[in-house]
Image (cartoon, rainbow, N blue to C red; front, side, top):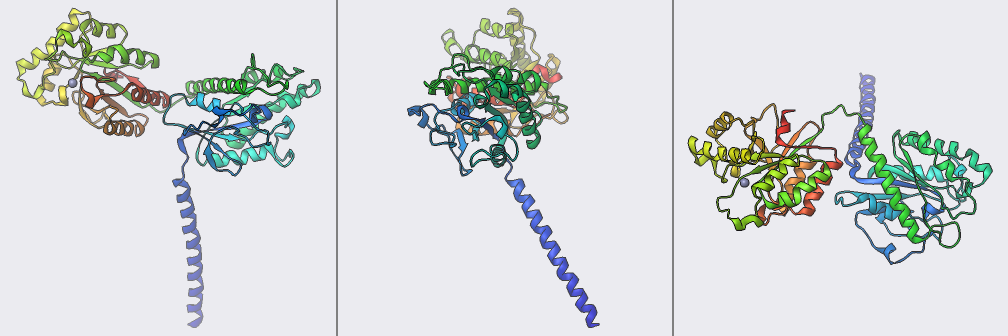
Length: 492
Ligand SMILES: [Zn+2]
């Protein structure tokens, strides 16, 4: 009896030990999930030799801090990026890193560029292999370790490579391309990112010999998603070896342009089985800025939109500084945008009887006819106020879509086409928060309609969207690959 009890005790304590281990495992898994990398932190690995590390003279511009650009220091801490970004030698100075970061960031206010400097001055390509040592460093292994640390914070977007001066003779040049190809493939394999963009750079034309650039330039024809930036017209700092400060910065910009091209190619070639997220832009009230600012801007982005027009009841000729005239509305149609109906005179539909509704809706129909604009099929309720009678009348008059408010996504399975929910876009503190929430939570396959007033709105400042913030919204939509359409496209 005693023995059995003892045996039970043993197995119970074993069970306790095992369950503690499982519990700890769960905690570590959970903890890992909590530190998910931020997709708005774009990480770039910088490798190669001295011209990637930077040898340009440090100047006042080198010390200017951009809060959106950070770098991983020698202790693996994120710090604001300033030159010298590298720490390979005490003579490290200005390289291409920071001008690259500035250029690739562009006007995007929502990303951070995170630079991971790993270049070693003087290193030949043969030391960029696993296990190879270069003075105190292991260039390849150290770079891999540091980039993995960085990838806990952000998303790796590409690799910049500038190297070749130490292999710039007839013998080493013959084996250079095969080594470079192997390096790209090894990095992609080790990082499990088979399509990771890789940009190499030509060495300066001021070098005494030129065996290596021909080799470097063959990379893009042999390895997918790679590019080479030219060193044409770049100047040395007097040593026929290193770029001067201005040229190093110019080189950085060239890297950024090439990197962006690779990144955009990648999006085009990536087959997406998922339906894209859709954003419908609806501009209300025939604000003058729709004609002067919004339409040209949307054309640049290749975005479509619906302009839901009305004539404000208080509109006079002198109001042309606030509102579009019909020639301007017709011009928007000619540019390819959809013209929709916002009632003849911005009437609250719930206060009108059937005949009044018909007159208000029909007024815009007849004005469109007069200006050779197709009969509208999309409508927006003034003040977002709708009732069942207005829906019936709209349907009778050939309207397929009518937009209300409600701050919800549109669910075609659930929502009626004549009371489409929408979010109001704006740049006041409150509306900006709401707009970003709507944009950032939007998932593939979901549809988001925006109600937008003037950009900017001089008549109704409470509903204004500043051009600057509007551009940020558009950049975000573009960057995320959202499909930006007009209301008429909801059919598809
Ligand atoms: Zn309105």
